[in-house]
Image (cartoon, rainbow, N blue to C red; front, side, top):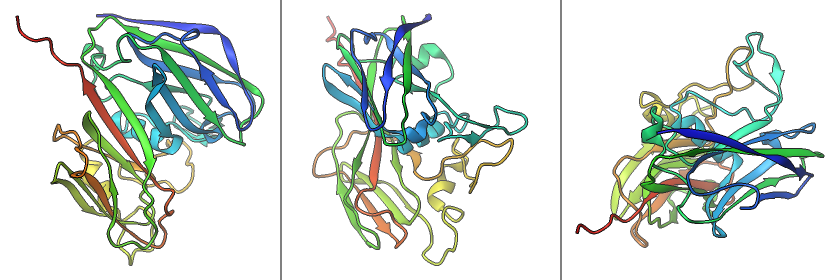
Length: 302
């Protein structure tokens, strides 16, 4: 059970408001459990990226907004790691020096499992050709982005799906509903917390999560979030940092992710998110994050 790391020597060019693409001519697919990236150029940090996509034979199975991605990594590493957005003061420097974070990893394996032989059963879809798209916004500047990857010889059992979609739920909505479906086994949901008064998730007609968010009378944004507290002793982070603090990493609390452990998919017409939103809610553009895994069909017994 081994992991092997390799890289593509020739980088791709970064420019403002462009999408950088790595095709199967540049990166492999089958057996890959992580894609790694490093950027050059002033300002080319997470703040310069709007979206991350990974495709198998041209079909996206990862398509997620950067804020949701940062929160996902924090939650599913059980709070062990957080990607700073940009020029963040972080605990990698004893002095709390502000640094530009220019590298990131797209995990395909189970990042909440400690042993690689357990984590690596989830990997890039077998036999498919990869395409990776990094969508840069107007904050990006001239520079380069390099790619490397980690492969495994562990036999694959499943492949991941990680995405976020617009819910079209307005602010000050008592019972805003967003119906969705998912073939894979759902492992988590990501949602904005500012202006979230209540969150309820129903899978296959059964309520699997229902909790209060920010009380309407609260003067704070996330300090009174029961949504966050329900995950605190389950490996999540429950503290809030309004600004970068020397010696402390930047905890992501908006959006935030909750783990889903019922082992269900989401059938059409019987699965939805139901939100109560306050005036501070960002509005109809807010996205729901979904993390799922799709197992391979087992071979019929002889």
